[in-house]
Length: 563
Image (cartoon, rainbow, N blue to C red; front, side, top):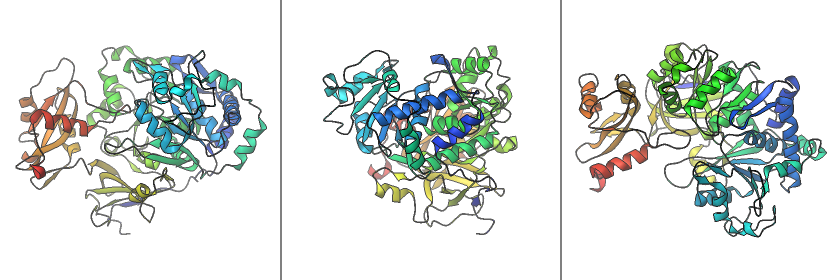
């Protein structure tokens, strides 16, 4: 393929790991038995690699003795905790497919997830803030009231047999996690026998994609998918057994489970959970107390940490690296993370659940100007290209098109949905992401938005990311999101939602005035809305569709094509 086309292939000098997660973890545990693998601050728990390996063997034994077999699905519905990591390792050892269930789900969504993939077991937290998780489980399966633990027969979840709750004490029809653990043996020969028959290409994890329309799809990932991705992510960060990574991002999402847990355990590093859910103060406290060398987060998390009124009280000088990902990373925020949080080697990662997730990442050696303006280069053993969405041909370098990726990281498929799988992965194995990107002459990729987020105003293609980056330069702006809203004359008009910095003031006219004469007239937002927060998912992804719907209602706008 010509060098001036948007196509790149990753390095292959480090070989792919062709083992299972369980076997690879055991090898790391033998190398670093007494090193801490986990610090769960809110639980007051610390585990060494040797301790976690033994406990995971015990839990794997318990899962098999509970009647689960390799290939069966077990759901986990919980925020960050030691038990989450334990389930991740134990299910991998036993060949049981771990199903990540979003803690934001309610009874009907839980019902959909469990039935879509046929979960035989559910491990659930008891409560979080105002959410009563056991109440939601009982709403779905009232038969628990009279069922014997492990023998549930629920009309709305017919394949679910066992519910395990993470609290203390007994609940009707449920096992408690401690009792489940007690039923296993760390020296159970059955675990070794099962583990010996597993292959790296076996599915081991299902994650539901958070689509804005339709039902979530279960992206099915193999040992090979996520183990290698975690390893190469850690390589880009230059992780070693001396690193301590603070993980405030949720484990049910790839960011926590792969970029956090698996990046660490493939390098003998320490995972540190500051809390069960995100809280900027506990992140700052944890980094100082545990002398964390790396910190993960989506941009909104870093913004909240930087803006915290007690930020200056904490010594963050132990930090050197980490990852900012999950949504486009504002240049100004990135600069502040480097300067004020000492994260001189912070990296940017880009990907999607269906690609395990990372396809591109900057490294600790990437020049700062490239780290703040791109998502880095193609990851090892992967192939990427930017195509014309209409013709499918690779576009010239510098031209916007759809980002596609190919290689070991592409998912096994959507669980039970071959049609949707074929829509996403073409016959040549390319995953079509739906993201708009450019690739420069040196192969650095910049994500400019989603195909569905691109605004077409009077025939001009407008990329919200470009306008957002410009508005971050306004001295009063803390965060900004730009969307398209219907317009009868131009088809679409631009609308900017703006969060101001604490103690700063600005009007809608001030924001528009800042743009005039500085960017093209058609890029100046017609509408500006000052807000306290953006609607977002539990993982920190902005829900632009919700913003768009709200503006249509507030401004009484109708789509031009239906007016």
